[in-house]
Amino acid sequence: MKAIMKHETTDNYNSEMLDFAQTVDFTELFEHVKNFANVNCAFCQPEIETRHGNVYISFMSEDITSHTGPFAAILQSCYFQSFNNGVFRDKKTNELSYWVNVNIQYRHKDGGSNGMDLALAWYSNSKGWIFRDAGNY
Image (spheres, rainbow, N blue to C red):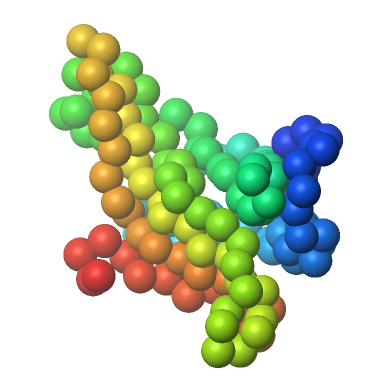
């Protein structure tokens, strides 16, 4: 699954970074997240956005509250979600890459919300996806 533009922008951005963002295939990342968390779920179409000259790719899963065991009784919603991310140029190789911090975001039925790290991931055309899962940082 590849990302699509969230909306047209008048923001100044690096077109080479935007072109790269449109080639990133998220299938392997989504499968890794589901396997690591032992949850079978679908992910929404990733969306590309430009802000302040930077290129970001955001994504979110369907609600996984039903997969949270006893916590389902106190959670209103729970998702896998990109928390921080961006397209960048590696200073050593000069290659374009994408990094993302994948979080579990949740909202309590009493209104509070929070999140926690699940994995860090990097993508480049030469290396593909590289993962560092929570507990192994």
